[in-house]
Length: 102
Image 1 (cartoon, rainbow, N blue to C red):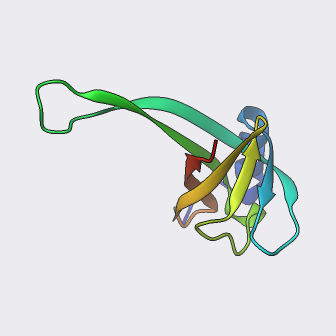
Image 2 (cartoon, rainbow, N blue to C red):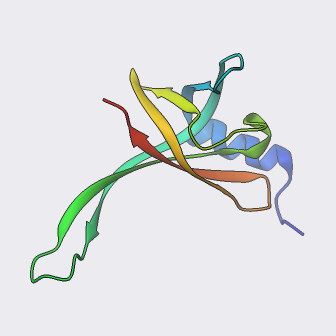
Image 3 (cartoon, one colour):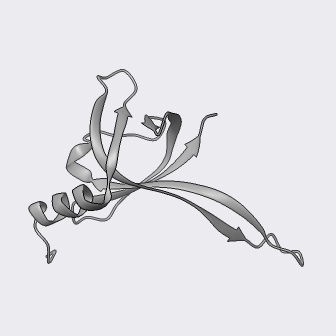
């Protein structure tokens, strides 16, 4: 049983989020609020030097993206991103791994 309520999750997203446009394939687009992270991550490829890659992610309320699928898109800060992985945590929050399409 989650500790927070649906209202608590909505407040967290509203406090730290920004407006993004959800563009599901073959369905109407909508504007929702989500937390966008676009940080660099160090990757060890087995050599002596690791390298950095950008891993854009969104954190949002699961209820805001009903029937979202890999391949659907988001418009964030005037850049188009495609969903590569959907990770529903079972408590009403979903984290989405994105790929930059530009």
